[in-house]
Image (cartoon, rainbow over all chains, first blue to last red; front, top):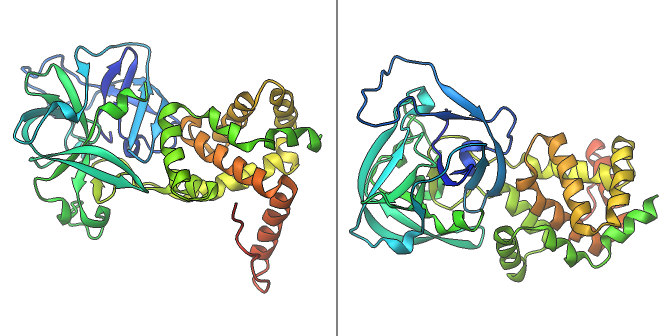
Amino acid sequence: MLGSAFFVAPGKLATTKHVTGADQTNLVLVFPRNDTLLTYEDTSNTQVRFIPTKITAVDPLRDICILEISTGAPRYHITGTDDVAPGDPVVTFGFPHSDTGRLVLTLQNADVGARILIDAAGIKSKHIVMNTQARPGQSGGPVFTADASRVVAMVIGSYAPGGGGGISLGGIDPATLHQTTHAISAEYIKGML
Amino acid sequence: MASDLDSLFSDPDDLLDALPAYQRQSVDTLLNSGKSPEEVAQLWLTTPGPSNTFPFGGERFASVFYDKLLDELEKFICDDKEYLAERRELISKVEAGKVVATSFMTTVIATHLGTTPALLTPAVVLILISVSRIGRRAWCEARAEVRKASQDPSKPLPPAEKA
């Protein structure tokens, strides 16, 4: 498993483009094993429930991908990063370390550290900096307001000069070991639905 | 048959109507900044997302799609035998409109490349605009020259095409 995703409309989920890649052959969504975070997840359980999916919209400049399945709907509103200011608490869900086979839906609390514009080939997009350390598998995770009523952003990665990838120690790029996590405004997801 | 295809390349900017609003907006911004359609097509397929950001999970963006896309478009619009049946169907769809024809061509090529039409459409549209400005026959000849030169290292490559 490569990343996280969340419902953004009936039958539609958002994730990052770097999670799905360009090839949708055999692309599947794996569902969490439990319906609630209160249940103890058995980390030795390797069985998963999955459903085939296809890509319906892609924005590679903003690293957003929309997936379609035949079930499910969001129980929250999709807004954007204008909804949160530096200092506001936010909550993110995802599957950290899922690249190594760990499948534990994990909640992380963080504060908004900054509002920033990030360029991609001349297109600037709204992002927030979350003051938390994210790990592989969390890309595509939703960033909620503290009351979990609105998704304001989606986790895309960690700040790294030049995009990182210079060296790897035990599968970890040391340039990503800090608490500057980038999340793109959910308003761009709304525009793709 | 080839001349029927040429109507796809009249008024090339109409091809941009094939793009959904969220893609059209970015493509227009990049074109208005002075970049050529080919440059924008290449950026669309090769930009590794937001700058200075290390993606958590998945794969880094690959740039091979752009070259493969050019190869497949060449086969499609330069009378190669590989897409004979599809080209016939394309010509019938040109009459239904450029958006329909472009969507058909993109779907066929995306299937061949193992990717999604949603990603490929802007690049296809932009390359077709570039072909329109150069002229289909001139573009096909230039592509053939590039291929021939790449097979014979003693010959220099022709100057790069620029719309």
